[in-house]
Image 1 (cartoon, protein in one colour):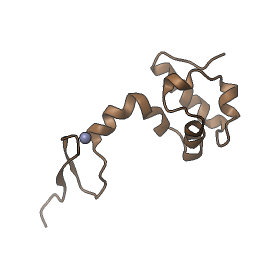
Image 2 (cartoon, helix red, strand yellow):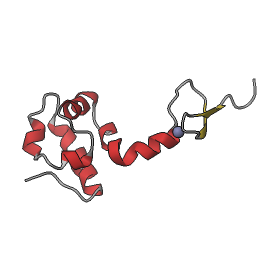
Image 3 (cartoon, rainbow, N blue to C red):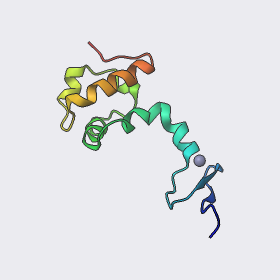
Length: 97
Ligand SMILES: [Zn+2]
C-alpha cells in the first residue's frame, strides 16, 4: 500500500478531483450547485421532502411562502424554520408575511 489510496477521478463535466471512496460525487459540481440547492442540504430528510413535494427547490420559491404555510407541509417541523430563515437571509430574501 502507498501512503495515499486516493484516486484521481474526473467527473462528466471534466473536473478533476481526488476521492478515497467510491462516492461518485464531484466536489466542484457540488459547490456549483450550492446557491440553488444548498439550503435543502441543511434540512432533515422529511423536511426536505416536504419542500420538494410542494415544488420548492430554491430559496426564491421558498420566499413566496409564509412560515405558517411552510409549517402546514407534511414532514416540516418548527426546528427547520431557523435554518430556512437564515438561508433566506443570506440571499437577501425572507419569508412572505
Ligand atoms: Zn464536476
